[in-house]
Length: 301
Length: 177
Ligand SMILES: Nc1ncnc2c1ncn2[C@@H]1O[C@H](COP(=O)(O)OP(=O)(O)OP(=O)(O)O)[C@@H](O)[C@H]1O
Ligand SMILES: [Mg+2]
Image (tube, rainbow over all chains, first blue to last red):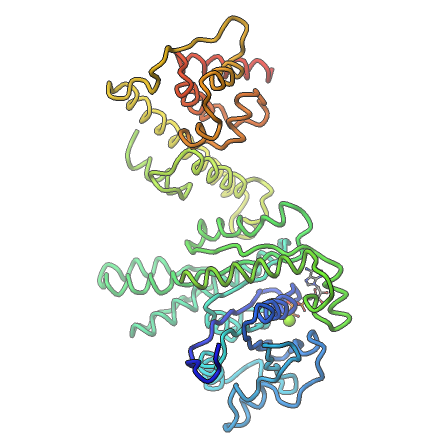
């Protein structure tokens, strides 16, 4: 593509969250980004794990001088300027902040600035690595994605966290959509789903209720199973999708699964991403498959 | 059978009203797995009792849909327009030939491929193969196996497709004892 003639279009955003910590978000975000770069696409990786930034380490880079902190402390700085080359062709990184402890409790105006600037980054793809937990920060970055991706381990505790996260995301999406329609609605308990409220609204404002339902229904999270060790575990994504349809009435799609692989551990220890190693292994194939699935489902949207 | 109950049954299995048997079967298997005692995907979403209830709801939804499918087919069958797809003489199994072998021999004699039967019945090829070879432990539950065999038998011009199906299921039952 000719750079001069290229129209600045909004980037495709993939947001990666998990609810539970330590499940492999950062490893997966990094390798998906490399996989895109290897396909000749240009991608900016954003470390939005505010307070636990580590993508530069996974990529084997020196700790950079500029990071997200500067976006929040200096009005002159924009996100584009914080993107630094990773040494991998086509891949830039915006480092997360580590010093400012209160960054994790980001002020609303600052968060909005970040969200606006992510959406208008001049690049084809953006991948955001989101910190664990279901704080409003995490949820808002998750909802920012054209593809909202959840990494899940085949363990009860990871599932419990993911379902909690999904309900919280659904409720947040509902509040946002309602606000956009000029309604002030919210869900008081994280145990509740938005559908009954929408039905109640339908009695008096059927068109608004339709619009709201349509908007909330656009949240169609994708699931990646990580560290699978058995056939059943590899297929858990499909079962989760079915459970989400049944219990939450939302469409969830299983993107694929990644096996537990010692090479992933070794690559983290060596600070060299698995996809940058010689040879192709199961992990690489799984990452490529997932990349393909994401690109395909992005196209059909 | 009430229309409302049928609608609910389709909604329970999350399949469209015009879904073919194979789709229904797959959805049924997936839902059974989801509400199975030790399914991990349900963890934290419902209690064990709720899971058992859902399991039963899925079971009866499936029963309802399957029996509806077959009663539709039987209705279509009794209409004169669609008497027989066969222009050649209808066949009955020779003495001592099991129903599975009969289906296979008859199919081969008429030079009909398995693929063509897959096409016409929408039943998966492996299942059709297992029906012919009488691999009982790999076959689906009798409620829809009966329908598969009837369809199969019709295509290969069996004189009495229902008789073949009954014989087949009877032998299968005896084998299980
Ligand atoms: N498929 C895998 N096979 C083997 N080990 C893995 C796999 N995926 C991740 N790991 C291990 O899990 C560790 C944690 O991964 P990672 O840092 O990506 O998790 P995270 O979800 O980003 O954690 P945090 O919530 O702390 O940010 C890695 O250091 C790696 O050793
Ligand atoms: Mg991380």
